[in-house]
Each structure stands twice: as structure tokens, then as C-alpha cells.
Length: 587
Image 1 (tube, rainbow, N blue to C red):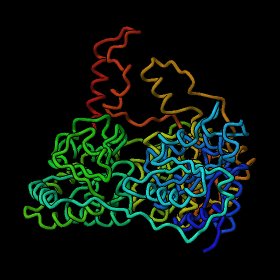
Image 2 (image 1 turned 90 degrees about the horizontal axis):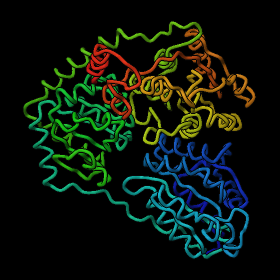
Image 3 (image 1 turned 135 degrees about the horizontal axis):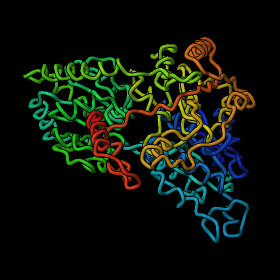
Image 4 (image 1 turned 135 degrees about the vertical axis):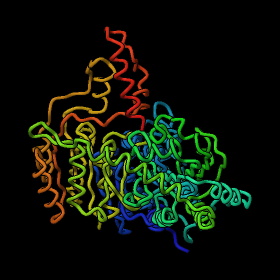
């Protein structure tokens, strides 16, 4: 038996969790832990802001499936990270957030940055309790081993999510007898009852045009492999945005993404053809369901999730299955193999659906007529041609362009933060993605509005030579909200435009190589350069004011939308024009 400092025990625990990077900003009360982690060969990446550090840890977790780790001091240093931790909570990512704290002997005395919940100080444990699976202040060394065991379980059990540990500096500096870490608590997966398995077989056998819908809960290589085999057996597959690429989107039976900015083929097949919808790891959110469209309740519904609270919260399932995605799809694969009728009607419907919308896609205009500006779709498609798709991970805030215009294959190839629409996510998160996947190209696509919120994190990439290709789609405005004001508020533009920034000079001031892109040729050359010589590279791409074609329910989403606007006179022909737009863009 040895006596060990608590700080060193925590470092040993981090190694057990396979944490190989820390993201954050140091402060007095966490210096002992940062020092110990470095001595245990866990490098520390210094961000420019705690929000950026939390986003990097989230990107790392999404890209690798491993635990991301953020360390900050207490007080404002910790609260700065709140939005990033909330993002990880909403997206179910295993991010460990460790904050320091003033010595326990100083609680209530007004110590600098005190946050023990006494007087006018916030209670750090309670502050993060609503945005984590577990938030705990460890106020004595005797609690440490139990706290680490429980924290590990919360991070990884069932629906994963962030955990917060707040540890006072005197506890970190305490020695305790150490026999080793407590064994991990048993993590159990729900077991499907035999009657549920029989019902899966029955529903599958009775379906001629099923649709397998895969969500964020399916983003593992193992699930992707099973899903491909299901598609090969004739089951059409669509995904949510957060499941994008799980099945190769070039597969004959892959329909792309459903939802608000999804593929028309996927939305159409669901509404017009599907007689059985098998939704796995899907929460049926507003974004996925096009504002809870009735089309999701047309076919019989099998809803599968590791988290029982997600099942049936928006659509009543015919069969609710509390299960891990891999276990369920293994059962479904067996059922598909025993399908006696065959799925020729499903295959015919997919072919017809794709043909219908592929023709329209081929006629779309994706070139800008404005000199010196590109169309966003043109940007996305040119980059995908220039940089090998099989070696690339895309991180995107601009999902309205990447969701349907990228064709991907493989788990965790498209990383975003759409649940909370976390603005400024991508410039920082892409750094964590590249740290986790050093052998992949990382392309980060975002708008200039979000970029203004986390642009300083490019300096972090320079400090540690983390090569990311940042693509700033620059139209000098908050594009989506600007478009909403223009369309639904009689063009009353308020708070969505700003004075331009010279982002090339800005990037260069941080030590980032930066290029102004005003033509397709310049973009192609820049991508070729990045492919052959990876380095932190910022492309300031001037884009036109193109907006995605709005689907009917997106338009209805704005409650102020009226077919007859009270502010001006207009004819019934204008009403008919709007109605026609709604009908044409139903899918």
C-alpha cells in the first residue's frame, strides 16, 4: 500500500478512461491536477476561451467515441464552459468536465473565485446539475475513489453524456492510502424479451416497403457494418442528419437524410411508400421530422432506443423496443434473412423515388452569377472532389448545405451540433476532431456569423500545429436569420448584418495561413494545396445570398407567416403563388 496524492489518483483514472488529451484553461485551483496529468503523459491543450475548450472536447468525443476531457478553474472560468457542456448533454457525448475549487477551509469567507454556494457565490455542483448526467463536488479525500467510480459509470452507461466533478485544491493536494482504483461498475445493456423479438420478425415479414431510419445512436463502425448488410438484403435505409453516412450514401438503397433540410427522396419515400418505419437511435426531434410532420405516423412504427424516455415521446409506436442499436439490428438482420416475400416492391419504389428527384437535382443551379462570389453548394461539392472523401471528416455549422450535398460513407464522417444549433461550434470543435483523428483530413464549414464567436480558437491550432481546413462561407451577415427577416418580417432587417472583417488579415495575425477565395479555380487550388501539405489553413470564401429551398413545414414553422400579410394589399394570385411554392416543396 502507498499513500498517493488525490491529483495523481485522478491522473491514473484518466489514463484508465483512455483520456489522451485535456482541453482547457489553467487557473490556480486546478494547477495541481494539470501538473500531475502532464507528469502522467496526458498533454494539455490550451484554448483561447473555456467555451472553445468544451467544444473541442465535444468534437473529440464525437469523432472517436472516447471520453473528451475539459479542465477549468472555478467561478467564471467554469461558467464560461457552460454552453459547450450543455451542447454535449443535448448531443449525449461523454465529456468529463473537471473544475477546481477554493480550499474547503475557505468556504463562505469570500475567497477569490469561490463557488461553493455560500453567500453570493454560485453552487458549482448545482449549477451544472441540469446540463450533466452527474455533477458532484468532492469535498473530502475520502470521497474520491467512490466519486471516480460513479462518474465513470455515468459517463458511459446507457445514453452517454457529460459528467462534472468539482474538486477543491486542498483535496487535490491530500495524500490517501491507495490500493488501486475501484473496479468499474457493471454496465448492462437492456435485454429484448422473446415476445419483442418475435414481434420484430412478424412486422418485418408483413412489410413490403420498410424503411430503416438510423440516428445518432447508431454512429459506430459495428452498427454501420450491420446496417450495410441490411441494405444489401433489400431494406431501404435513411438517416437523420446526426446519422449521416452510416450507410454509404451511394448505396442503391440509401435514400439520404430525412428532415427539415434532408433529401427529398428520403422524405418522399417515407410519406408515399413506407409501410413500416424502423427508427433506431432517433429522438424524433423537430429538425428530423420537419416540425413533427404527420408522415412519420403513416407507416407502422418500431421505435428503438437505449433511452426509454425517447421512445414514443412524439409518435406512438406500434412496437417500443428498449435496446442497444447493435443488439437490435443484429435481430433485425436475422429477421430480414428470413423474409419470405422478398422486398422487390421496396427496391422498385426506391428506384422510382430516386429517379424522380435526381432529375430535379441535375437541373439545379449551383453557380453564382455574381462576380467574385461562389454558390455555397458549389463550394461544398468542389471541396469534396478535391479532397479524398474516404479520408475526410466534415465538421459543419452550415448543415443546410452539407446535409444533402455531401455524399458520405462511414460512421462519424459528418459532425455537427444541430440539437442546440450551437453557434460557433465548428471552428473550435474541428480542432478536437483532428486531435482525435490525426490520420484524417478535417474540413470545417461554417458561416462568418458563427465564426466571429470562436474565431480566436484558430490560434490554438497554430500553437499545437493542428492542421484543419477552415472554410468560412462569408456573406457578411447571419444568413439564416437574415433570410427569415427578409421573407417573414416584410424585409425589416434588424441585428443580422455587420461591418465586414478582413478575415485573411485576421487569420494571418494569428499565425494561420489564410486565403481569399473569389472563384472556383482559387478554391480548387487551395484544396489541392491543403491535400498535399496539411497545415492550419483558413479559406475566406465569398458567397452569394443563396438560401436553401424552404420546405412547406419550414415555412409554417415561423408563426408570423401569413398567406395574407396585414401590412399591405395584394391579390389572390399572390396567395396562389405562395401555396404553389408550399406544394412544390413538400418534400
